Length: 219
Image (tube, rainbow, N blue to C red; front, side):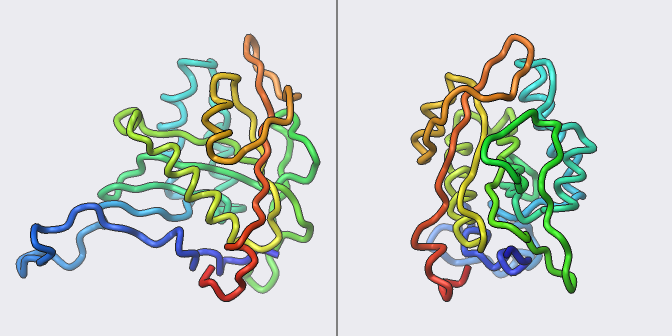
C-alpha cells in the first residue's frame, strides 16, 4: 500500500548549501527566500521543466525522448509519489520519474504502467509491484558534478520508505551499466525494449532494507 504520507520521508527534507560565515543569519535576510537546495516529489506544474531537460538530454543521442510531454503530465498526475526532483534556488536541475509496473520484466516503454487507485483521497497500490524508473536526467548546466549519483541514491532511499515496493527496474545503454551497478543495481540481461540503432540492458534493484523495516523511522 502506498499513501501520500511518504512525503514525510526524511529523504525529501530540504537541505541548505549556503550558510553565512560564522553561522549567523543576517537580520536583513528575507524570511521567504527559496531553499538553496531541495528534493521533493514532482507535480504536473513541473512537467514543462522536466520535458525541456529530458528533450535536451536525449534527443541529440537517441532521436527521441523516453517520455512525451503528455506522458510526463500523466505520470506526475497519477503517481507523483514515484518521482523526485532536485531544485536549486527554485529551479529544477535533475529529476527521476517512475511508475508502478505490473510485470516481471520491462517491455516497450509506451505500454500502459500500473497506476494506484484512489481510496478516500489516498493513493493505494493494490498489488506489490516493481517500480519502473522511466528516466533520470540532469540539466546540462549541472552535469559532471555528481548530481545524478546523489539524486539516484536519495530516490532509492526514499523508495525504502514506501510500503509495498520491493524492486526497481530500469533499462540503460551498456556504457551506463557501471553507473547503476555502483548504486546497487544488478544486471538482468538484454532488454526487450528497443530503439532504432540502440540496445539496452535491464537493471534491477532490490528495495528492501532497514529504512523499510523501521515503521516508526519517520518515513
